[in-house]
Length: 163
Image (cartoon, rainbow, N blue to C red; front, side):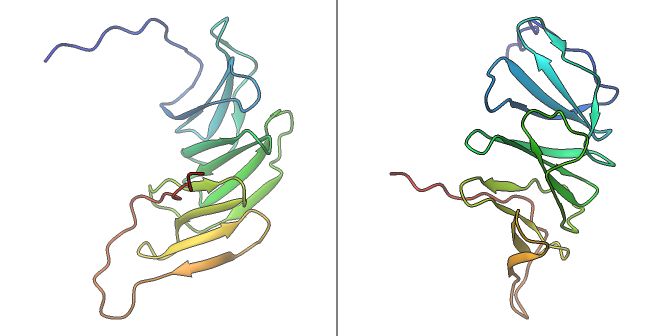
């Protein structure tokens, strides 16, 4: 098997390992990156430099970054058990919405942007919880019945309807 090609560019700016990436919802020349230290950087891809200092978005490792082009929001999930919704301008130090989900494992959330629903494991790792970004508690919890053999939830995904 052939070795992978060398990178054409390396973006340096994080103080710890990069854990997730996404392009800005309105500006395709902006790359968002989050790291194991809970920080987010916004990059100008054209000049290959960060636009400013790293912004702390979580108290610990950021697991997931999702962008919602229609709503102009950036969503982050940290190992601190919190999912945040940020204005895509990222010009404020506080999120627009903060959900304390109690999910501390490594499963990344999924976002259904149209309905502002977030799916991720519940506090019990064998449970699935659906959260509305507009509520302070899950709108739905699904747990296996008594006697069912269940393990840890390791992946969640909304199935997108094709029209």
